[in-house]
Image 1 (cartoon, rainbow, N blue to C red):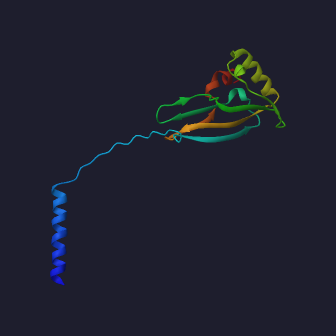
Image 2: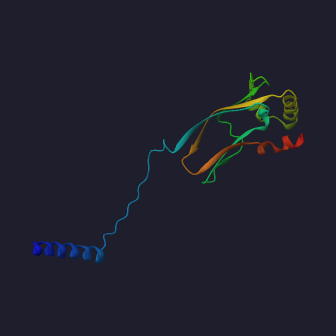
Length: 146
């Protein structure tokens, strides 16, 4: 029995020395050809009772340098009365309007205590990053009322 164990130990030791002395080096490179799963869909439904839609923006950024301020896409800003009823939905024309009509609309909405509901979804890359709701895209509007 001990001769058998000694023989097994010699074979295993010789095998390990051979693998150490002559390593098997290999490399491989794989390309992902399907990109349908590179993005994650994030559903959003947030409500602010006393902040006008015209001064809220959804910003997206990630570690690859992708950054969008005031993302529009599949997001919809619904203007709310002070009782929470939907008054209207922001459209692209209002979003791109000159600042003077925007100032007037924000002033009216602030006095009427209108709110905003941000509803829809965004698609983000599967990389480290974040999205946040802020107002820095409309800082000139906010400073106008300070």
